[in-house]
Length: 136
Image (cartoon, rainbow, N blue to C red; front, side, top):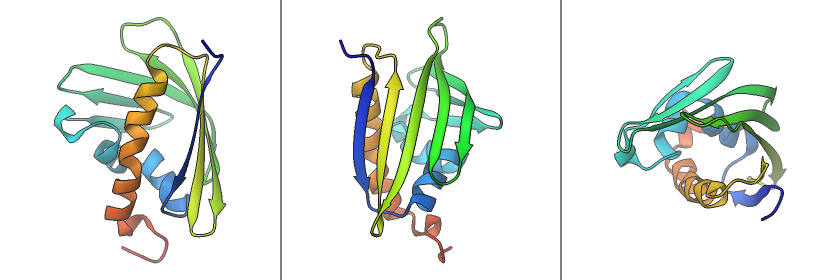
């Protein structure tokens, strides 16, 4: 077991669009979990992500919120005591964005879960030109 989940992705959009996909409730609901989950999201000084099918939810509070570069938040599944911390850093690479995610400490299934979620993000970004500066 490692001390943290570490994932890096190159995404087909500028940091501002990726930031919006990570921090806007409607956008996050559109890609975070599969559409069949019936995802509902609430964002204020923290966040709550709920799935209807299967019934599950995760919530946390924002520790750092530096648009469009750095997002740090706590992570706790409903019904569990463990609270972990997720750090996401966005770096422009031409007209793309490098996303670096660190989730610590490592807990079983976090790496698979994040990879499953992040696999849906590029498709969402390319289908949502309204997120790009100068569009929408």
